[in-house]
Amino acid sequence: MEIKDQVVLVTGAGRGLGAEIAKAFGREGARVIVNYHQSEKKAKEVAQNIGDRAIAIQADITDKEQVQAMFDEAEKHFGQAVTTVINNALIHFKFDAVNRKHAKVIDWEDYETQLKGSVKAALHTTQAACEGMARLNFGRIINIGTNLVQNPVVPYHDYNTGKAALIGFTRSMARELGTDGITVNMVSGGLLQKTDASASTPDEVFDLIRDNTPLNRVTTPEELADATLFFASPWSRAVTGQNLVVDGGLVMD
Image (cartoon, rainbow, N blue to C red; front, side):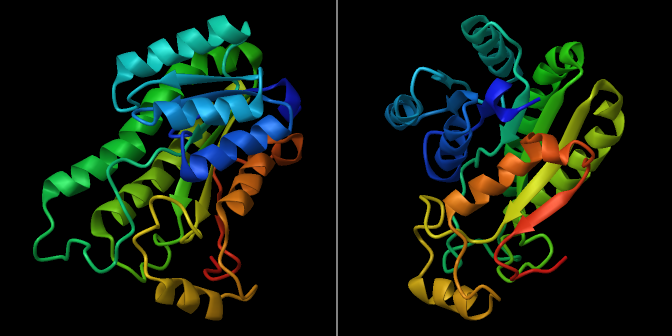
């Protein structure tokens, strides 16, 4: 299915990377659901930027009933089931290496928060999407990960663990859902310059990344957003269960 024929849900699309992913799909002609939890004004601005092919819908993605209601509303609005899900939303986390919780003080509740934001949320959207995708014999689920799983240069214990679990989720779902024409993949970025989540990161860290990256620059949200298009496009039709690291070559996995 061409991207222009898809109905694409992007979670956490009111700002940062999610907003850029939503706009990238809108640019390619897709119909886009701009999901948000609290950033209503920004989400509606993203939808307006895309045009009449987009709608902003509020839902807490850790709440299964709210996720199902969002899918029902989207299908009613567009007259077609959701074909493509981008699990992007980031729950209660900022990339602040200075003030991060260290190993001796981090709480299990911190892990739970990130596991809910990564795996529980992806489970809800996948379960809500797979019936409609199976009817179409087409589905694309794209999970957003991090290169910190491969190279935890900053040990964000809770965040890194949540994203590592999401890789396992991605591969297990790819194995089961493939017979319904559904692919499940992951796009993993590094520190992006800049989003709300990375705003607390000192410039010196960005300089260090730039100096150690083969492309000699820091990846932008727009560049990572473009990479997600590949997994939704017909060009990726034989690819599932994969993790594409998009960080300018900083991590070569």
